[in-house]
Image (cartoon, rainbow, N blue to C red; front, side, top):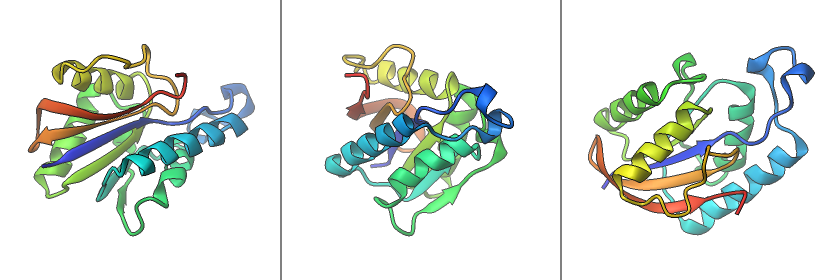
Length: 162
């Protein structure tokens, strides 16, 4: 059964502190929260064989906290994932599953990543505890019914604010 882990990047520096939005790195708190999220994912034993990671610095830095859980994993960072809409994220995950991925981890940005997480949680009838607005470092995982995202089952939730 295919699965999907959705993660919003960790807390990033303010735009005024960076060269541009794309180059915003993580704050000290962001690194700490990403460590906590990665530890929770590791403790849950969530599998992944493909990482879809926005190429922005803050998402790549967030991914580095998870990468040790998945040695040798294939990582794909197309520019299309940078501030992607929910629909674009759904297409990217569906395509990856249709091409043979069995367990995808997706690291991205709000509002698209949060909308995607909320949409799948609602489809799974599993909104209990799902944080409003999808905070930085939040993670959620689902079992899927093949490449279709219509009937997910929520298997994990990490809310850094809880």
